Image 1 (cartoon, rainbow, N blue to C red):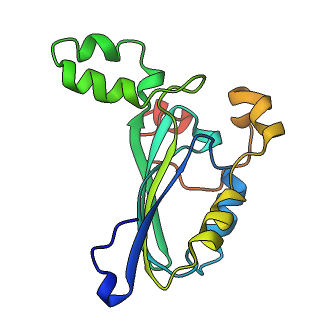
Image 2: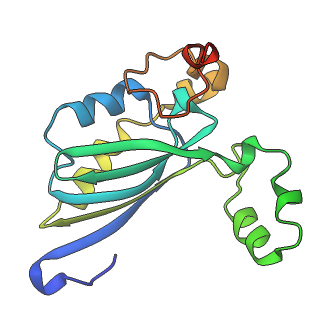
Length: 163
């Protein structure tokens, strides 16, 4: 917990998970237009099962949530170690984020609010994660999930192939 604005009743916590959000359940939470209960703002990045190879930047203020591509996860790029070979500090930092079997894929959201019920918010977000059975199905199955979020700018989709 961070305590910067505590005298105003403002608190924050970091929501961290090592499994992806299910796109339909997350969309349901965010589309409910109620925001995350008690939170004023949240930001960070997340892993969504249907977009397994892409880190997603999360930026939410009130009830408006903006999700956009944060680029590929390092786990998707077999050459990342070579790219940072001459920068051992960066290499060390990135490597520290890796965890088997999913590499650096994870969810890290800082949630800021007034009089928040942290436990309720955590439960609300946890419900959107893949369950154990869905996790076992793996990325190929996840790619078939209905994903009603808009395409990210620069997504490599068939629509862009003609341009």
